Image 1 (cartoon, rainbow, N blue to C red):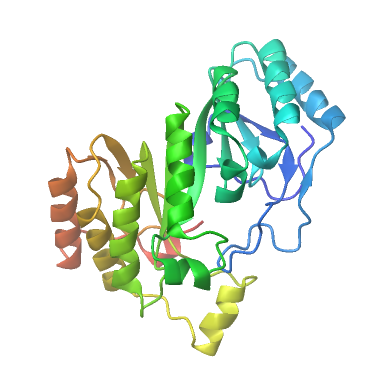
Image 2 (cartoon, helix red, strand yellow):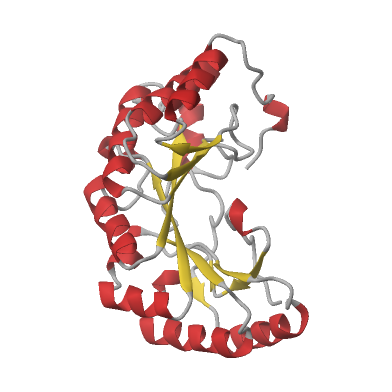
Length: 289
């Protein structure tokens, strides 16, 4: 496979064929993200993608899922995406699910009918980074969209019959906006009504503008107790039935994998126990992105 740079995929795509269709991220301005800093975004040549599909057809026959990397494959023009999906069906007919990352801009650039057309050709799941439902925090991290736009984008995905997985970031509001970020994020998630919520904990990376802010003292990361309080407030403000809630990423202090609203009370009890010191937390030495 012709991989370039860092290949990043969601944890749930660990058993997927990773087909790199783009390099980098089409936005690449978020202050907290160091994944693609210094990388010019580009859509890879069809000839390279075709060669990788041929490789997968020969060597990846046991893998039933396909993930289109990198940071925002949905930005590819619709005609090229449709052609790519037809080739996937032709060359990898055993694939049961195609998934990709998308941001608000690329989602809103697709009409509802275009998303449905991709769904009919095998697109099953879209991973979207909300990070926060708190507009001042979204502006501070240069996310490129406010919460209303992201709610609209999330609903468009759901209305097309696609599985929506939304990522949020504990700590991204800093100490000052910790609780406001948590409450607003829970409320926005309620309006989006995703199929899956993945909560990660911010880890400040040295190659990001947020790191410079932290050194200057203009951004302060909440401590473990404050992050647990954030998590509690966020969960309290999510009112969605039948959504998978996961905080089991390696960055988190308290692993959680449950369903809302069936397990909501159990989650809140677990967080309270962690706040009281009755549940062991993941040591910092074992946390990672």
